[in-house]
Image (cartoon, rainbow, N blue to C red; front, side, top):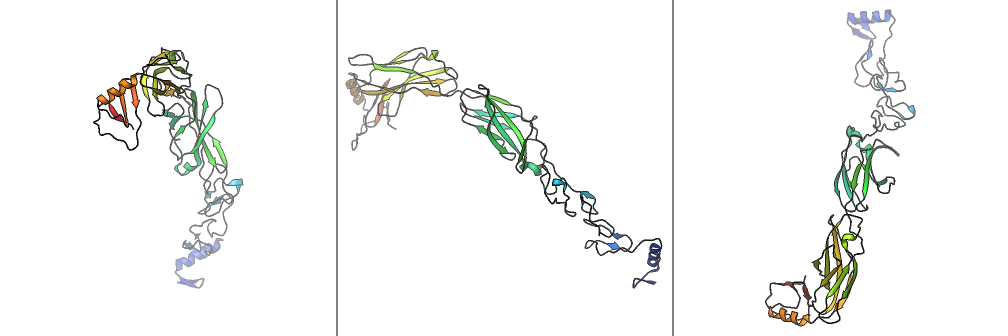
Length: 365
């Protein structure tokens, strides 16, 4: 046994200390070692944090951090170094290196391998969906988004922005307030963003869509007049030859004459041919009647003309009332239909009749 630095140690330790001193090595101070890290006088601290071994006195050089200064700092802004222990950049990160350590890069987006598809279209809207960008780091989704834009191909104008959405938003959108029966190009440009900076990547392949037909805006109805001065009087409806009209949309496939007793809501209709120009409504009682022409194109969109009114006289009224009562049909509060004939009687306050309902009579709704 021998005494070394005031402590009794075995002979081997004494010899080792002597040998170290003889060959020129100095005693290593262990006071700067991290708490709990083993250390001895000869080899020093087993590991340092933010400093160099063996005594952990000298801090890491600029650009390095961590255990024994083995790790390199990230892309710190202005090339300023990072904290020598937790690798956080003092002045933040360079552009497109978002997290505090500045070790993860926001790649430029590329949509060339992704597709836009059509969900639905109407006469004034187009709804699309798209494939999400692939290869995006899950921790960086918040830094990506999509610009959806469209342009009218018939005018040859530039793209108009529809909306900008985040990467995590639903991958579909409806573009509204479009023109009917018009060709549109739709483009999606992915982008990356960091602070106030936004940079667009390569766009998706363009989707081209034609909106459906809208309601034709055409001068359909020419005139509505009474054909004779004597009762019974027919109503003569004159309209443009629908087959000759040039709508801005698809072809007109259906047309009909609609009429009603003025002041009522329900319209009755009679089909007419699109190659004709005149339609005659039979007499159906004295009164003022509203008439209009409605057309429908092969897109399923209908449009009605302006309403014209005409007043007629008819001796058919007495016969009609006779037929009504002989069939036990209550005229109060009912619509009664006999072919093209409509007579809507007015509801009378405090007046009811308990007559059996005839099968052709339906309550006014």
